[in-house]
Amino acid sequence: MNENTNENKNIDPNENDQNKYETKRVTVSELQEGMIIARKIYTKMGILILDKGTVLSEATIQQLRRIQDLYFVQIMIPEGSDIKMNNQISFNRETSLSHKEEQKISNEKILTATAMVESSLFSDGVNDRILKEHISKVSDFISDEFKYQSSVLENVMVGANASEEIAKHSLNVAALANMIGKWLDFKSSRLNSLTKAALLHDIGKIKLKEKNPDIDEETLMKLHPHEGFKFVKSLNSEELNNELAQGILTHHEREDGSGYPMMVKSDKINQFGKVIAVADTFENLLSKKGICPFEALYSLQTDYFGKLDMNIVIIFIKKFSDFYVGSHVILSTGEEAKIVQFNKYDIKRPLVLTDDGFIDLYEDSSVHISQFLYS
Ligand SMILES: [Fe+2]
Ligand SMILES: [Fe+2]
Image (cartoon, rainbow, N blue to C red):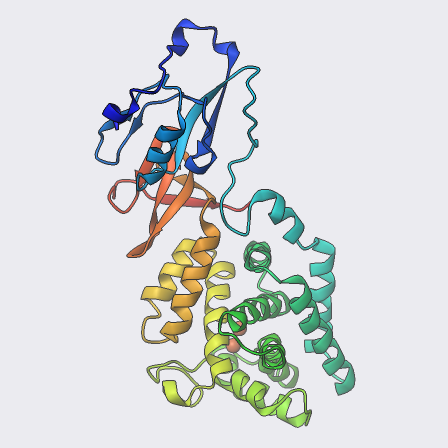
C-alpha cells in the first residue's frame, strides 16, 4: 500500500506537543479522513503498510478496509478537529454496549422467575392447577424477557457460579431451549411447549426424592426421565401435551443409543428431547463444571460428537460464538485481550487483540485463554 499512499500527508507526532492529540483504538469501519495513524500498521505477514504519523485520506481508508484480518487501528485525532468518535469500540452485533444494557434483565425479575419455578416444581400437595399456572407464567416470562441471545447467555452466566439449584438450572435450560427453538423456526405454540418441557425436564428428580429422600444419585439419574414423563402424563393436561412429555422422557437419550432410559437412537429421540439435551449439557458444563463458555462449546463439538444432534450443536456454536466476539479474556501470559474472530477448527483458540497487537491463538500454541471475563 505504501506506493498508493503518496497522497497522504505525514506528520511526526513526536515533534509536536502530545497533548494536542487524542489517541484511540478504533475499528477500521470507524476510520475517518484526517485521523492520524498512532501505531505502525503491519499485515499478518509482518509487512509494514502504513507508518506512524500518516494522515488518513479517504482512498487510504478504503484500502485499509479491504485488508483481510485488519480490524483495529490505533489513531490520533488532532485536538479541536471536527472528528467525533464514540468512546466505545462498537461491534456490528446485537450486543453493542448500550444495546446490552437494554437487554439486561433485572436480578429482581430473575429471582421472581426462579422462585416461581421453584414453587411449581416443588409443589408437593399443591394442586395441579397452580403448577400449570406457574409453568405458563414462567414460560411467558422467558418468551418476553429472553428475546435476545445475549439476554439468555448473560443469565446463564449469572447462574454459572451461583448454585446447582434445580430451579435455576431449569430456568437456564428453558431459556436456552427457547432460543434454540427460535433458531429452528418453531412456531410460537410449539416454542411455548418446548419451553415448558425444558422447565419441567428434571421434575422427575424432585418427584423421586419426595417418595424416597434417601435415593442415591445414580438411581435418581437413571429413573428421573421416566418419572417426569409419568408425572406430566398424570396431569392429563392439554397444554402439557404428548410431545412435551416425550421431550422429558428422552432428554438423556443420545444419538448413538448410549443414553438412557430406553437407549434409543437418533430417529427414536423426540425433537424436544434433542434440543433439551443440548441446552442441558451446555448449562451443566458452565454451572457444574464451571468451565469457560469456549471450553463448553468446544466440548459440545468434540466430547459429545455423535451423542448430541450435530445440526443443533452446529447452529448453537455458530450463534453463540458470534455473541462472544468482543468479549474480554485473560491470556496465559496474564495479558487482557479481546476476542476478534473465532477459528472454526478450534473455538478455544480465537484471534485476539491485546494492547500490543493481534495474537492468533490457533497458530501460537504457547498462549491460551486462561480466564473468561464475564461482563
Ligand atoms: Fe435430566
Ligand atoms: Fe437437567
